[in-house]
Image 1 (cartoon, rainbow, N blue to C red):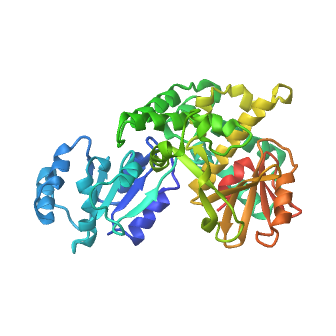
Image 2: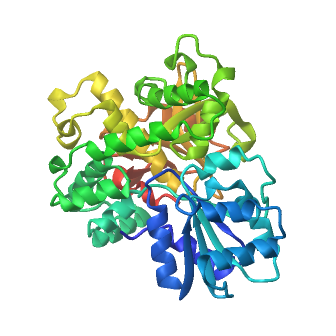
Image 3: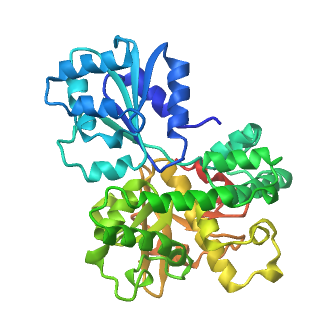
Length: 442
């Protein structure tokens, strides 16, 4: 499967190759597969080391000897000399703090080392580092599951992508046939999620979502729960990490999606859950969007660390945890839709939009005024602050968005976004963006 993150790797190769690259992201999003493809395609000489299978490498870099001697012993262990053309990949690098701390030595060496590091829970390890972390001596890039554009590429819909991007740029509607096809593919993507293995299951099932069972996602969920025992201070912290993670579907399904500790446990307190929250955010399993108290650039300046919403990193996992019936999403039968179903669909839709925008490296915020208005998402761009309204269906009523636009008209962009199942368009300063085109927002 083609991944857009490949361009990030090319940027490192072309512009920063002698600074160690560290790739962080959740387990099973395709980091190792993509890096192996990259080094095979782009380099003639490379070394791949998985530290889970090579404890001897960990031991070498933990020795109390000079850095030069460690490199020479490493060369002897792998049986080859490192040349200026050699790329070294250390997978599961979180297994060795010593090796991570030595990235400073690799970076500052007169010899042009070329190093890529990756691993599961690497982001968590960074936050709980005991040795001297090589600040400023490594490039850290975050990788995500496949977004919807990558899903379209994987399912041979490149021509559809071109039509979507053109319609987005020109604010012109797609034909009904292409619009309906894109919506159906979007709904399919909600169910598969962005995990490469599950998308491959879908492709190998003749691209019939009804032939894809939930076994893989259930297994991945159990794997994530198992990971929650790693890099924790005690079993109590592990239990709290799991409780926060399992509370997210219900947190998102309520009217007010603000994260509330009471949804974890009636007796839950903020001080008890600061570390578990940090663990989940650092792992990449959970994404956060913070409330802002002031609608002025830069929004980051008025961000609240105490008021936020949490989302799962994959919609397939979210749907799996909610036990949603496939037909409830794939078929538009209004007569069967209850208010509870609409809330759940709203949760899934908002989770999807947040995933898409964050995978485009956008910083997200939200705002609300009690009893009056809530803006689901805002982005801070060079053209101003853009409020974004998210709708799961085709409803065009924008009470909150209109109230917000009127209240802060001097502080925000002239154009706001409404994301829904409606076609492209621009009317009264609101740009209509179909749910399948969120990847176009940069």
